[in-house]
Image 1 (cartoon, rainbow, N blue to C red):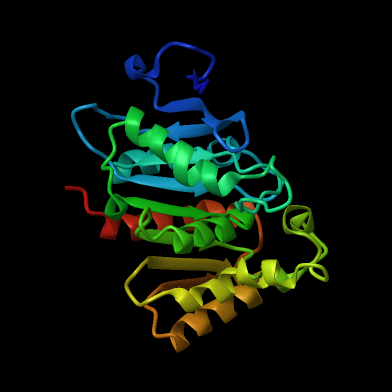
Image 2: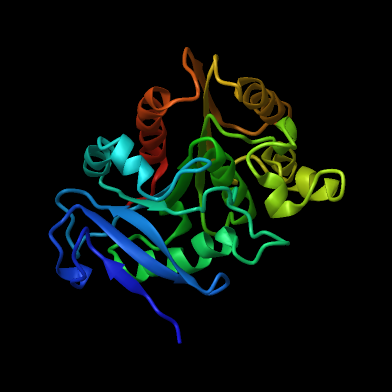
Length: 270
């Protein structure tokens, strides 16, 4: 039997009556056969008789669903400012947001695009349309956001990346990627086909609104610059930002403001 656990902060009351701005929900994953937590941030003046765009905001390697709201509490103010709902799903400590072909415990692509998306649209006052849905994230989550958006253009109209690990071949020995798709030597196609830098070849201009952001002192700076150059060569419109900064929360606290401003500009809020 399908189970959905709803938790609001420390309460188990039905969230439809909640006056809190931040909810914590646990949604059942059909593929992983377990409940997965997410944070849902509503505008401060959230009303059920109004419909809102949704931004899915992904965490990085070794973090979890609560990291964004704990490290960058200002995203609550940004949800109110832009009149959006922000959803921060748990992506496992090293899922890279794939459906792993070798580990049934890591099926986060299906969880986010199917189970969680349906739950959010069924239980919150959303504009249930791709034109009002965006996804972004940092580091592993930057890769995940671009990966999911490219593979699910029927679900997302916009995607962003902050310090994204968008080329898996940057290192084939780190961040437990091999545990999800196999060693590079044994499964090179899994690595190349799942790297965002290769996946953009399938994009047509205008299919996704894209924004990419990376600090010039970030260890992922070169691969993000390469992605920017490749998108230019493919004549795919996108926003690209580089500025002084490292792979840290100081940078991402700043970057998320630009990302949400970019999404807000293109959302269809009707």
